[in-house]
Length: 369
Image (cartoon, rainbow, N blue to C red; front, side, top):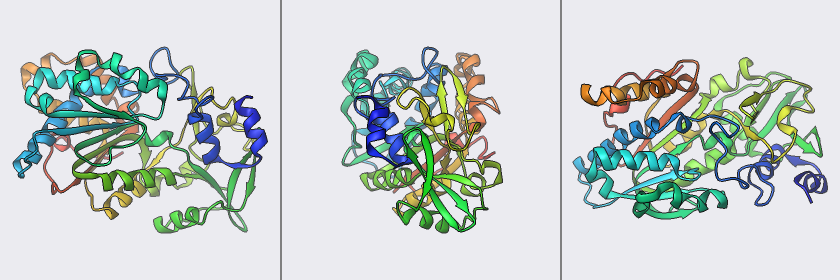
């Protein structure tokens, strides 16, 4: 049996169910079948693939997180570093190597928790970490029950299954996958209409948009499990007023295969993301307004939402001139270049029990483009 056979047997399914199967099916899912999908040999390129510099700069911010907690009476001798969507552990390894070299006290305090759905990726984590593996406390598909420190999610929310809806003259309809085509039907859950209503969004007839209920549930759960500390989300997306607008009225579901992106071009009933399920990545832009609102409803404080460019420039500026001279400037340019990773990726920093501290990652600017 293939994934297409299973989809044909199931009959009409929501786009969210289709994405869940295409990406995470334990036998046929795109992410389940490999420990690494990005990089030169993969299908897409992330900040981690630029080189170790992304993790090295994040380490500056995370070490400051520990110092901020300690200044406010944090008495624990350990600091939980939780990475959600950790893959084979490359980013965590880059962070820890920088900590071992630059902030040994921070390194000694770290308890690493890698959260990853793919069994293949989890199996590769110890080898990836190498001599840093003594910091690894847990590796699991699920977040730790409770933690204090920082949770980092780099390009996780965009790969969560989304529902797709379309506005018609007679009201909102949901998009369903039936075999190799799309159909429309009634909403699978009233939560979809409630989501748009809560945002104050009005869709024009013909507009097609994605709603990521999973991301909202995930941040709520993460907020409840974080006792004290920070959550950092790095992803591409927009505030709701920009995401649910004429400029994105065809939807944002996109596929990546062989470093080629295929967006919403082509007939509406056979978009590129519907082809070859399990053989290509599928992503959708993140609604940062809903993620932030859900986090705040669980007691978190929004510290900043800014372009990756300005976040990394702030971290770079915190280094001494001697340290700056050792930075790989080709990597740095790739990470901060407007129009590339720098402006397409946003950084959302949330805190719990820490007030609203001044952070080096927010010292350059808090611009959001």
